Image (cartoon, rainbow, N blue to C red):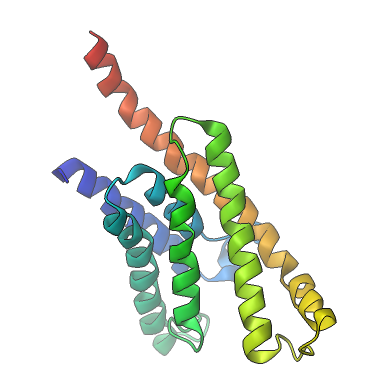
Length: 187
């Protein structure tokens, strides 16, 4: 990996980390965090699969460490580490696989991936919450599972909006950065 690519990836991690540690009350309530978009983007543009998983993992880990530190000084910050966190890491990393099937040059595929990632995360994470704890005291029945999904719909909405928006930004910046190189190659 050359130096400029590493710098761009470090910048992406920093941007996603900073955005994620901003308290919810200080961000637009309709806009979710960028980590799912980062996972899809990494899966699509990074050819080394192991490195593709490292980008969203680094963003999550750094932001969780910072949130943990900040929460010890200010209760307005959510604790970075919590029970059940490992499953969220696994689920976010699993959305990187969606990016493996996306061509960075096909906007329809990017949009499909940006929709698929939060939907997959929503379905799996809410199922896991229901199966492990019964959600918000929901019964372990089909009706309880359905109610758990209904409870999570506001999070799905913000996750969809955020993932679509941030995917557009990430893939758009990548296309803009690649355009001068393609122009020089044609000259």
